[in-house]
Image (cartoon, rainbow, N blue to C red; front, side, top):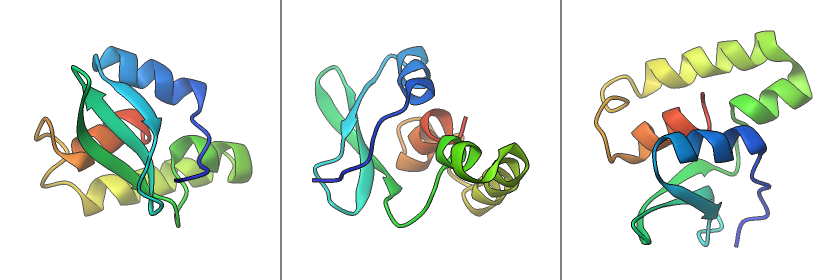
Amino acid sequence: MSSYKILNPQLKNSKKLNVKIKTSTNPKKKLDVFKNNKKVASIGDVKYGDYHTYIKTKGKTFALKRKDAYKNRHAKTLDKKGTASYYADKIIWS
């Protein structure tokens, strides 16, 4: 199980999407996303930071650069509802 700590902005983002998040049971992922009590995705590689952790550790300017890099890497699937990159974008990168 991942030791990732869920942050308040991530909880707020998940509520906007009408999904619940829990620390992932996959040791390589940060969060598991649930819709109607069914797991729909595991998001966030534990080897890397995310928007909110980068803000805390390296500042907002650095976090925004990493956010842009994430959005560029995943541009093809960010808008496809239900994909892991969609949930990662909306929960851990917003």
